[in-house]
Length: 126
View (cartoon, one colour):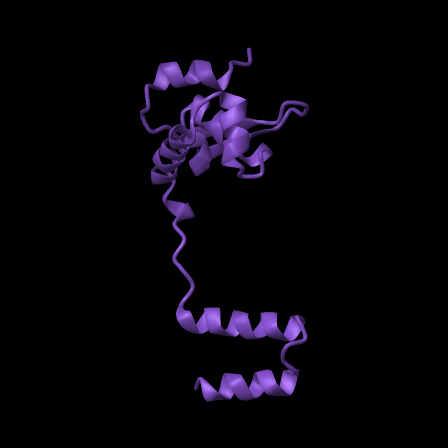
């Protein structure tokens, strides 16, 4: 019998779980071992739905406000709470040197700088 993930949440009550057996639904194959869940699967079902909706809205908080019928601060607070539960999404800002190089690349693609001029600017920064 297949159970919904939400039903499992009530059984485990937020405790850490390990998957020990996986069976392919259409084949007579089972794999046993210790498998951990992906980090997103550790979120409560309603938070998983919220993240999926955010992705479907292409990250638009304005669309999320309309979809859920709540205010901007409510969406931001929930995103902040969920992101705090997902440490792998920590993003460090690019170092200044990397930003400078990206700016030079942008200037090349816009035609503002030639490749030779860009090389000279890069050497000045060394």
